[in-house]
Image (tube, rainbow, N blue to C red):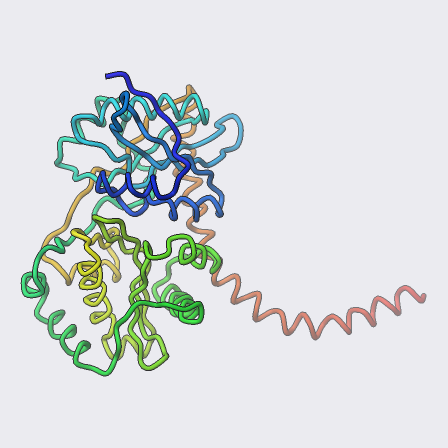
Amino acid sequence: MSLAVVTCSDRAVWDDYVDRFQGHPQQLWGWGETKAMHGWSVDRVLVTDGDEIRGCAQLLVRKLPLPFRALVYVPRGPMCSAENTTAVLEALAGYAAARHRGVALSIEPDWDADSPFAAAVAAAGFKPSSNTVLIPRTLILDLTRTDDELMADMSKSTRANIRKAMRSDVEFRKVQTAGELEQVLGIYHETAARAGFGIHEDQYYRDIFANMGEGSPIIGAFDGDRLLAFVWLSRSGATAFELYGGVSAEGQKQRVNYGVKWAALRAMREDGCGRYDFNGLLNDGISDFKKQFAKHENMLIGTWEKPLSPLYPVYARAMPAARKGLQAARKALPAARRGLQGALPAARKAVPAARQVLGRLTRR
């Protein structure tokens, strides 16, 4: 097998290959477009063997300070068969080194930990890494099952809360307008403050909504025109993947967060997805809520990196500390914004007095 790596510059062609390989929505063109607007560059490549396409990957490239140059990252990819995995990864690593001069090629595939892929990844010279972006421990539901089959795996209280929500006057439907999107962002800020996690700036989420289109549906729980809760997803032909979720204080009282999750599962099944990934499980309250929807957990293969530079050992030691600093900064940002907003009125009042003092001093 003699493989070559060629770029793909056509959105329709690229997304068609993602679906052919039953790829993950984070490999879709629109997701790469959003990342390109927020600090990354994007390179979409096909791995060819003559006229045959053996695999493909959306490479996200992040510039690093000298001497590291760049990190090349593949979220929930690459896409290929198990038998071609080693050869495809070797071709991608060679390309990442030559084209992007990366310090490492980091991958987080959408493959089960106990699948044949793990041995193939190791055979290509990749090593497990703790520099995780997407959490491998997760919950994936089989959407080919019926409502009764899905509910049978849920806790009794979860089934009761879903049925109560679905009998209420709340309407569960997709978010459609820019005004409804702003309600989503308002509830997401409220949820983040209550749960204590960091979020991006609002424009990041607006860009996802614009760039992904139908590939990123938001299922909302509406009381008239007022949004109470939402589940924001990305979806390819095969997989629905939760991105974000939130519920207002009123929505919590009505337990509509159960209803909107159920509505999201059913909507993604109606759209043709066979898998629904809850996007990571941690030891927190949000994960406890997710785990009420099934009796099992899934473990994906995790994060693997292939060194592409002699400087990789230095990078590998420095990266965890840098990531922790970034996460801490993101968590602190909402509080800093609130503090700044609180300080602004006092600052505005102080400006005239400061000008008067400055004027007296300059006249002396």
